[in-house]
Length: 86
Image 1 (cartoon, helix red, strand yellow):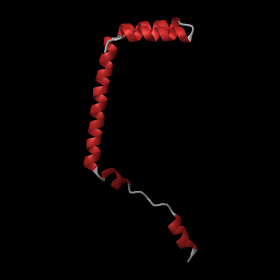
Image 2: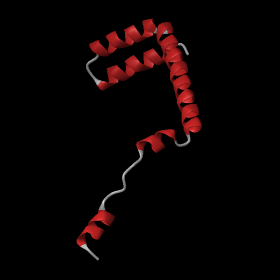
Image 3: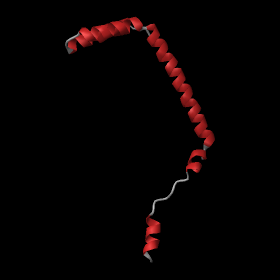
Image 4: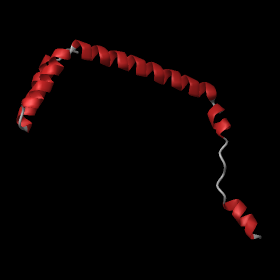
């Protein structure tokens, strides 16, 4: 066995990026579509929740800013949890 044969075997396998991208393309495309739809729906729902609860979120911000200890911060979050609308 020559040294060049040993080096040839020791080299890592090269990846075919074109094959990686196109292998199982319909499955990958479906997964991407589902992920994008999930992201859009989640963004709309979270944005709507924030729009409905801007008052309690502002009060929570001011309360946390004024608080000086863990007990006061926990009271801020308790009040926020009671005020927030689903």
